[in-house]
Image (cartoon, rainbow, N blue to C red; front, side):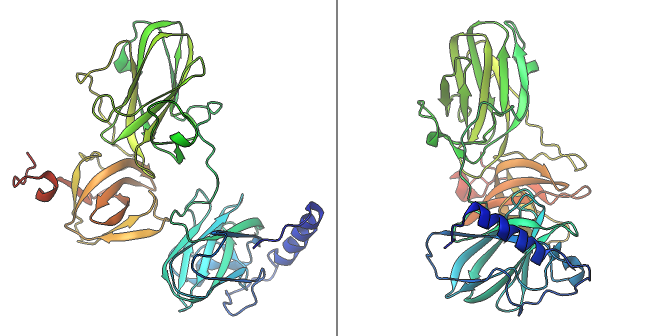
Length: 418
């Protein structure tokens, strides 16, 4: 659907577009849904091809969107006329609208019934809006800039795909990147307890898409989670990880060889090496389930680990009440005001709403905890609803409390699950 242009033509167009769409000196005061879209209209029918449509445009404008009080997350500065119009020729089960930009952008959408759908940050500073059961008709779209008097080239994406993430290609585990959570140097005789580090397992890269070593599984990040540097050769060394979630391990040894392991102690992975040369050993902790992130402990021993080794997952988040919840726990939604908790697609309030979990509902914690936005987020499983993330409280109140599994889930009439 996009027309390729020469580099010279693109440069001229960018200059002209920036000139046309740069914020004016006179303050504007509204978003005009009936205005002529600056970059045109595109008609979509269910199953459109290619499945991801994109168009480049210049974001920003002079209207202070927040002052217009259009609704939650309707922020930034946008032009008066729409940037683009999506015309749905029929009803859609789902349409996802995303923005990719080097700027801090916002997204404002006017739906056929006149309501507004907005977002600020979903993919980093890039916004996304998910329209479920989207009715046929025109959807006017503005891409705003979070900062006043800021404008620049942004890419608008339209897709029917489920994930509200930018349709970029995973790059795979990259040993050239610095480890996310740090590194330890080891010499023979080290104390395992003093060389353990909590990390967050998971990522967007399916290991088997990039590594063919035996036993590979799970989803990992691009950068290694942790690195161990062996100061000298070891006759035997084991690299292990512990988590109440189902995790995997990917190891790149000092000789460049890849090693993988899924389960060793229960669902905890461990990789043992004999005659390990001095050098760096990069470790990725994967989540067996896509889109999950779970706190995990990485550690090393000079002999095969056993069940006597115990590490505690730190679930504290700054400024929040401590919790006795862990991945694998069952929790009861128990807000003092009896309000429902919103289930989000990602661990932030700007992500799309998946479901409302009513007060008194039992839920299983399958991922987390993830500390952000002054909340501690947990990924949960509930009924037939897609898995998502909810916060467990605030600085002064707990919204989840530990409980027992439902009887049907433990295969016993004993409510305690024993």
